[in-house]
Length: 92
Image 1 (cartoon, one colour):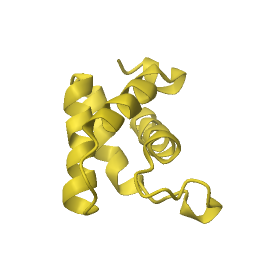
Image 2 (image 1 turned 90 degrees about the horizontal axis):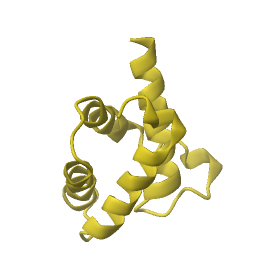
Image 3 (image 1 turned 60 degrees about the horizontal axis):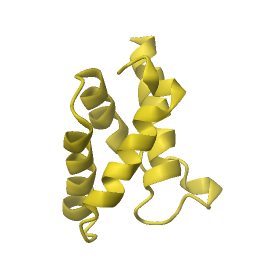
């Protein structure tokens, strides 16, 4: 369980660093902006979902929950960066 919490924290940080569709990662107080999305993405990583599926989920969040335009290509690039991170590698 502790490992899963660590994965979620790492995913949250990576979403903030690499995804950031609302453009707030330069503001220190915005660090937790994407925390609520991290458990779902972490679960998809644990379940070994393909990168495109994870990217579709990020894109769905961006469109349906944030009211922003679709950016599936950017979401896929984000997922590639997340999955390439050493903190995530053991879950792949």
